[in-house]
Image (cartoon, rainbow over the protein chains, first blue to last red):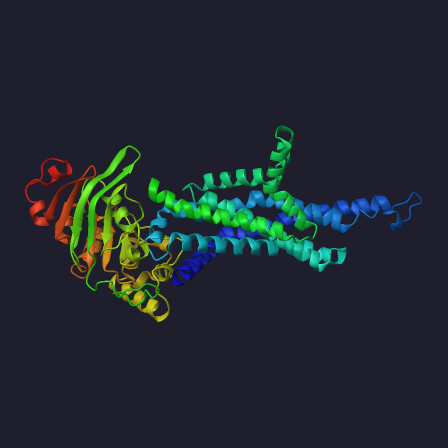
Length: 263
Length: 251
């Protein structure tokens, strides 16, 4: 465990010693804030349109039930944030393995007491923790504003779990892509491609058979993420993201064996 | 041997140096034969030089010994342990200095040494003592608090050497330690390496004949992946040593 602890400490020092961590945290808070306040503005406009009557008064009884802060603000914000993360997280994960390889420091790592399994474990743990921290900071605005808006603390927790698992899944894909290249750009582009393709396979429905469409839907991220957004913590969805993370750690671990063979 | 490698049984690690043996070591990269049937033995405590022109296969040989690469054929043993089957045992015996100083530029020298010591299984007082020892030995007192990215090449190489000695390994592999350094920095690094002779097994890869004469007892010469000469340094390098680099007949 000592080598693993040393690696985790080093990863944290490098991560928080560079502007990347602060820039990405700020960016996520800004983007979430912008999306949130834009939806809040639209919500207020809809409210005003429904509630204003021709006599110049204000009648809230004319506002339909489906116009509420939960459905009009919170869910669209979560949906947008889910897609934004597909674009943002690869920018954080692209350097984690690829930079070690381009600098040649991976040779230093694998000739120490850090086995490839420990290297992968250390880097994944630090990255997962960072993206969960990122989600926590981005969640502050919507959470504070919607606790009073009929979401409920339990639902809010479910949504946060879903958001964190989605971020962990995307980070895992990004890390697996980073483990196979020394180019950060290639790592980021590969992670974007995998992330966007896996987000939603509904585009393939017209061109594939029904059974294939069902299979694709089963591996798509969006239906799982959407389920959390509705405040439901289904263990099948948790298992899906855990399986995705496990698969990606195994792929990253394999990259070390692959490199020993290929050179 | 090491005082701090706690999670491995180090009772079998010899005190003075490790023995390295390769038998029929062969490594291919696609159609390119980078190492061709190389068999040699490096004795415990010996300063052994690996010579050859650029592209002769020195780094590939070293990477097979450290376990960074798998051999296509043949085998490697470090104190009887294979880097393929027992990588942890081999790594427990190994200090490694890469061809160019590969150090994290965002870390301070002290943080880098702390990380390397930890990665070799050291912790607590053992780690602090090991860092103090190498800082003194490699004269890093003035740069200990500096960022690695602010160091000169000479200091980078010293830090790189220092990390290899943290866990007091019986085998130190140094890959072209003076490559890219100016003459003063080269002399600095050589003087450090001179002081290490006889302490432990030293495998030094170089294409500098003067460096090999000065620092090693025996050498092996590689040419296009083949072992073309091996023996006492003075004997192998007597006469026309450059002929060996060109793959001409052994002396």
